[in-house]
Image (cartoon, rainbow, N blue to C red; front, top):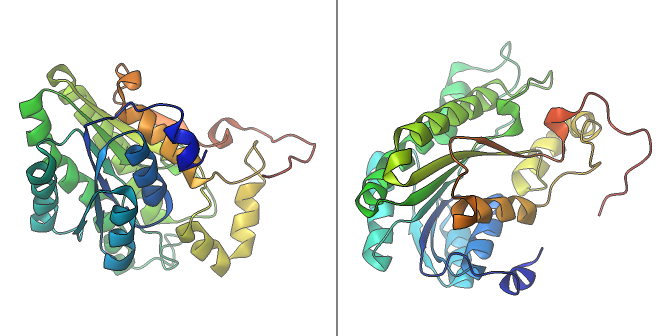
Length: 269
């Protein structure tokens, strides 16, 4: 679904403020476009000023350069959102990395392990910690944390720190969803399957066999488009998901449910 298509479907988020980390590319950019099309004020956070500013300008929002591993910068991000728009209604904690040096536990060094944990898991902790006080005062809010289908299944094509970090995001999200449910706050872990993003392309360019080994296990026969993940974020952010909380929201083309995939070829889009 394109942004133009979304504009003709619904405006579920009119007047709400959405903070999006990793907003400059991939799932973050697609989500920025989608939430803006549904009427949200978007606050785009990214460490890359060029792509982050471009996303904010396109969506009519604001850009805040943010290193999501820095507690002070994360606090400043949510403060800027509140100062600009008067609320923090949606937090899409999406920034993440998957560097090639994160591989098998037998070859992944401690420095690579720690870097992935900091960006993928500690940043989610920091963003939730910063967003929750605003939402608790409002007695409402939706936090969507990007986990992954690898949080619920194992793989021999290992990215050990990435997988562990996404499992942590899933567990953290469940606990917060339970803890703050009666204050009107929902916390869900979005678990995408493999998505056709620059991050995935970069990873698989290093190892085409890894891409082929993953693609064969997806019943849909293709990787997801970032706009399909953005549509799931928009749902979780909206009142349509008012009873969806503390869950692993899988958007994976059936990969986590597959024992074998169909024999017939599935044409990709």
